[in-house]
Image 1: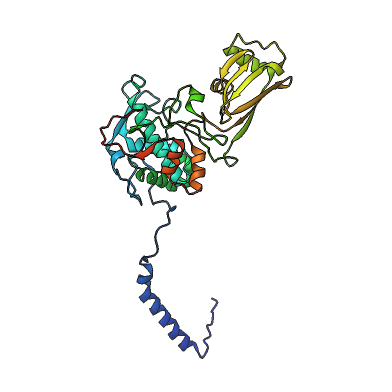
Image 2: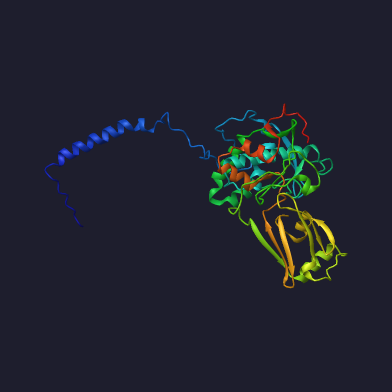
Length: 360
């Protein structure tokens, strides 16, 4: 056995006494150190604690109470699932799932708040005019028809290690905007939104042919920070011809490729409104859909080597840009300022009563 000798200096008793006094003072002062000071508040961007998302989605107290707190939880809707089943759930639970699916939870909190208000407004607007669109249901979980949708379990898998933080962030965005809507002349609007654009949104009339006063073109600040903001799509002449003539058999593509594209007409935002291909006129949206482009903000060229599209942005470019909203939030704008910027002439507020009929 190894024996270790401890040698003490002549001053050791004095040092021990001093150490004892320090420990006594520390134990006496410890409770005071743990009490919160008057000037110490939780930072505004610090997410509220929350368990992992579950089917019941536990409530988290917001730092700023909504003027209509509890409204979302009091409303119910019927959701048509992809398997044909109809599920009844609260508006709050539905909006949690939509927000988790529609916008990256890593975005600024004020952008997520703007998204929840837009999603709530869009839901009420759509529910008021669906008719026989969803037999026995108010909305569906198909993003091509209504809004994207993720269950809490699916969201947690996608978020990985950030699941707890992101769940809390979405909870907070919902609770701090509870019951708030984008209203035009007192009614919920058709609050459409999309991913990103090339510096400016588009008028509804230039994209869909319908004049909607609150869906007017405005500047949008996103840019190179957006993943896949600019993309290039190419086709061989054979593939392009087969795809186009499969839909428009009357098209004349016997002329040299350099003459296939004519009369490319753009709106003030740079989005293609109409283009003539092989003598056939089609909208920018039709061209986007046919060739699988991320947006109708494109230019195109055909040569003997093939056909190339240069595309900017992602989505239809009408209403609120999600990446633009995140950029505005990063500049210090709050959710109300973001919404009232993208939806011209609207106000953000609650309905007179939960029974008020939604309309547009």
